[in-house]
Length: 341
Ligand SMILES: C[S@@+](CC[C@H](N)C(=O)[O-])C[C@H]1O[C@@H](n2cnc3c(N)ncnc32)[C@H](O)[C@@H]1O
Image (cartoon, rainbow, N blue to C red; front, side, top):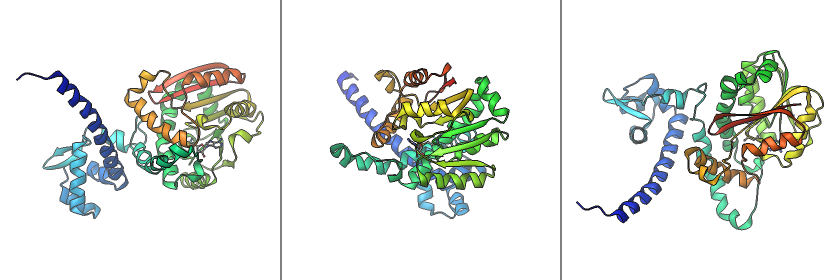
């Protein structure tokens, strides 16, 4: 049969659009599957039938069947013994928070993005911006879940390559975490470096309430929690390490925050910026990490900032007088820039 090149191009264009919608549905299937414990139940009983899955979890059989089919369609589930099992490696990627490439938590932030996205219908015209205190608690909690794998990667992949930082943490150094969020990540650091002493700062009081609960639940002892804008911190020569994870790009006055980090450090101390590296070139946005970061940029715009390229942080550190500045690519959505006072 003769092919029609123009028709093929049109089909490919339509395919691109439809694949985007399919990804959106897959996101919801992941979110529901995690939130409702469906993936866990299937992991624990590979080959479980839809009827048994519904019975074990006390869920409606029709909803359960629809979800299983969607999970299979998305490639998260496989057929097994007439029932369903997790597809290979989904136990790690979706269910193991200690896996450095864990991606399950991101589903919560992607689905919680709905409200901010809907608000843009109005705000495109008004240009109105908001701050964290105007976001839903579900969104703030979800951000903490998305942030967690960054800390796992810091502990498992990054710090072992940053000799001075690792040594200070292991030797029980004092650590200031700027913009600690819900402290899920800080509890992971405290577990990895039990001798280290932590001070954590965030500017949003309700987020700090969640942080207090997470710190108490983790039973990690003394963590000093401080409610303050990062721009107003006045610590001086006090810390061996200042860390900021996926937050420096949000500073209202980045120069002041970097200067505050510098002042807070003891001589020889390290400032570690861990963030999502926005691509330097437009062409690099046409990748999965690029598309994900473009999604995050909608929210960043709403709170009046943007994710930034690594070169920006290097420049800030140089200008603030940091020395021995290094960068580390951890994954395509995770980079580190660090320097010494
Ligand atoms: C993306 S969250 C990251 C939280 C945490 N580091 C994590 O990775 O889960 C950003 C956090 O920074 C806080 N934040 C943003 N800008 C701030 C500022 N200028 N001063 C104090 N806190 C700030 C917000 O309240 C929010 O909790």
